[in-house]
Length: 385
Image 1 (cartoon, helix red, strand yellow):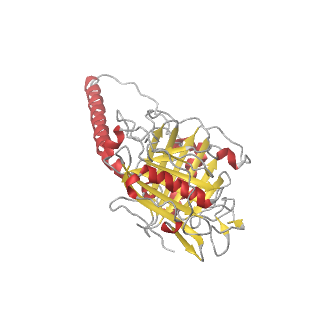
Image 2 (cartoon, rainbow, N blue to C red; image 1 turned 90 degrees about the vertical axis):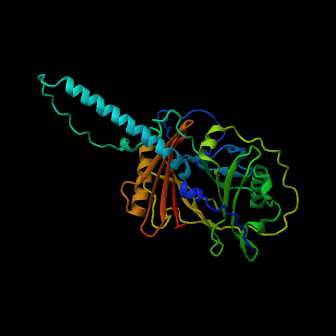
Image 3 (cartoon, helix red, strand yellow; image 1 turned 120 degrees about the vertical axis):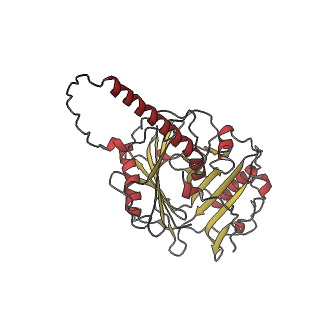
């Protein structure tokens, strides 16, 4: 069966950016990290799942029959960072110049006066709290840019064809001019012997609110040959949805209202492809390794994994542990001890994005999300573009 991908030229992959989209709220970003509420390591997985039909972005919701694991990943795209970074750097340079001038003026005023010898302060010893994301990278700006890309990782619990078609129907309502096919899974799904092996859609279009967005949807049922699902998937398909605003970055900051989508009719028409979702017998080993050679640390609990796209979602009771996992993962995958880091303080969450590229062109991304529900770290390994 064929697999059709609708790709937008000139737009970098949203997971590569992983750097998240407006959820429709205009609530300003907080100035400090929220206090994470610890959850016992042996708490049921459903304590980390979203509620029924939880909102994602632009009017899209988690479809019935699927659950989102952990929070949304909301970060700034590379295009957004490139747009606002010069403004930030100019402001920081101006502040530094003013501070230097004040120090010079103070030194001139005190010239010739006796000075008291002060006991030098000891150099503080770094602690794990030093890597806790607390302040938005763009906080010095009067209006820090809000995230423009969002990713949701989900597990499909009910009939996969119905869930997939419902998700496609939502995308069709969001991008009405793109002619999204909702009644023929072979349009987007690869298969072997009529068994689905992977589904993917990548489309860019204009929303009813006249905003240009890119939508990427991937569904990974597991390994067909061995009848093995992804680790921690409960023998179910894994679905990843990423939505990125790809219009003018500054214009995208002005209109943050959610889309008013037309009511979606129930998916009650026959499905034309007749493709079958393979029944998996077991999950892949939970101890890993994942993403090549990464294995979960003792203080991290894996909640969900995927192979295509490759990711791992880890829960930790303390935010410092989650931040350390993010840093260690990127450093181990790339050899870069100080990866690029962007902190997004948005609504009641803080997202710290770590990114670096290995010599072979592989990009390692880690997004540490601190919420009132706890600390979650998303790890991604991305092949060269």
